[in-house]
Length: 558
Image (cartoon, rainbow, N blue to C red; front, top):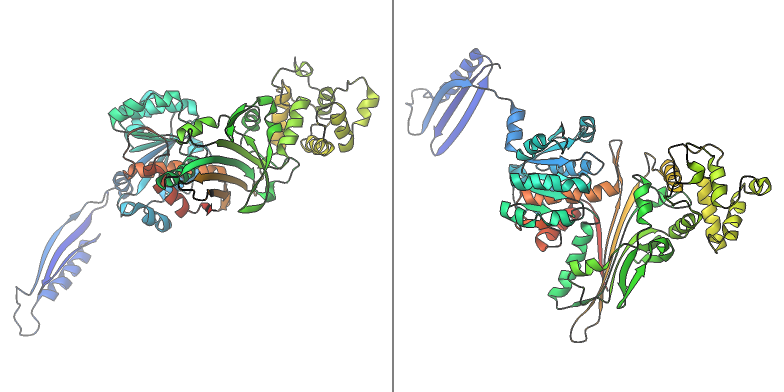
């Protein structure tokens, strides 16, 4: 460490006091500075020095330099993000930007004080693989990458003990491990996952520890809660009763990227999305409870048009159990309709329903794929369509879109000719009719479908995804007032900056999680225990920041 010579001085001139300090590496240079300052205090000409009006006090010493970067980190608030997937990057970017000029346009508006100037945030990203964490924080200031296995008790506790807030972006099954550590170390926790029973049981312990475990702080669940509760609470404040609540959410390709017969693409593995399309659903419609069996879910899709977005030809499928949201939002005893749906472009449900009936989503081991057999994709298609390989005349005719469509109709897999044609187009687009061999890793028709969809329905590096969230609430007011219809819509597209693409899905999940951590750092959330963003102290400031950060939220009342 090099030595620097320092000079502290106090100058008194009438009623003005000037405090200063200068330093230099060379003692000779400092001597010259002292001479210059001393000359200021000397009398001019024959005029005597008035000590009361003009005086300089000099003190020479040695300045010790320390590691500035280390000191800066010590002064910052610290947040630990566990998991270095796609959602992590936007979360880390938001938190690390606090105090920078880029954050001024939204942070000053929403934080209502000088928090961002006094308490910059340092983000630690922990991942099982260090290289993943390093890649995630590349070019993001105020960040550190560490290798961290949450099953390593000592290491997990070490890093959690060094921060104020933890964000877990790990699989939901890992959250309880992290949550227990946060309770023991008295650190706040934020997740974007559903609050399940294992997390709910920690409510009393979290309250006793004086911490908040804020779950469901993503998109769905997350922003959907915030938008819904703002609308519902405003209605109740005005003595209104919610007659109908409908909510729709979907992760979709942007219109330009919806360039395949299915008008859909996958950001992650398609397996989860396909399984979700086989889940049963329940909702309330005009006072009646409606049950949809899993095998009929795709066929239950209905067209949807959003008035503010007339160019979008959409459809929605019921999304699992909508009734629990009536209870969660406090409208179970007043709303005749409670419905939550998944958004897709029009035609998706018909095609997926036909593929399901053909057998492409069956998870049962298929005889044609067992014992390491590797038939061609075409041979497997013919098997599913009921044409045996020995019937070469039939085999030879199924070469084009028209032939496949006619076979789909004749086998009863769908009745509508137009749907059959679109299904045939999808089969051809996915390469399910090609002569190359099915890999031996595929043991079921589901495996074959997932393989081909992952290959053919992936986003290119220049394509954008899109998130669309839409709520409609009908409210009855007392004294025979007219029923009001409230609509709220979030529309967000993936962003490309400096050659990097951040998906809309990653943005709309990662940003709310980061905002949750920021609100806890600033003590804007005072409720302790296990919490969802359905309380005003969470959703009001969170929605303000979301909009100030640049998300497009549209509201309409009729």
